[in-house]
Image 1 (cartoon, rainbow, N blue to C red):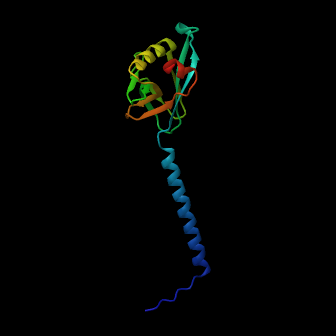
Image 2 (cartoon, one colour):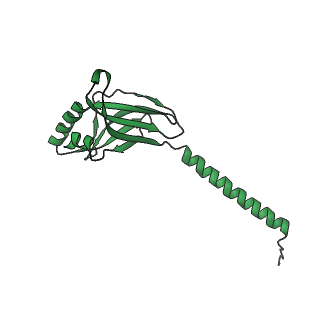
Image 3 (spheres, rainbow, N blue to C red):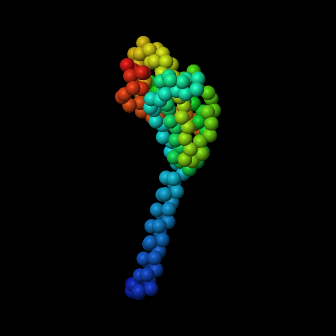
Length: 155
């Protein structure tokens, strides 16, 4: 059996419109998948205290939720070069919720950073990153770049 199929103008238009719709639908699906992921930025920088820490040097760990799902921050700390975690004794558990687009900063006094750094250096390690853990046990890292904060830890 031999079928002789002729492409008419209406068939061609239907094929083009159907193909275009498939491409748009696929792009929308990919966009929604990417948008719904958790996207948390962790930054570490030097800061200066106010209130009871007036005039003292601090380390600011800034947490920004760029995703479209709220996250519950449960733990803030530092990663060592051997992969272990160094949790600040001042850290509270369940630090709070971050909605999409929200941010918070967590401050650690320089004196405590230097004390933690001494203990870590005695063991032969160094502090390489700050981290934040949410209630789903997902960990987000922020590198500590060489500069003031780096030398407070590893100097």
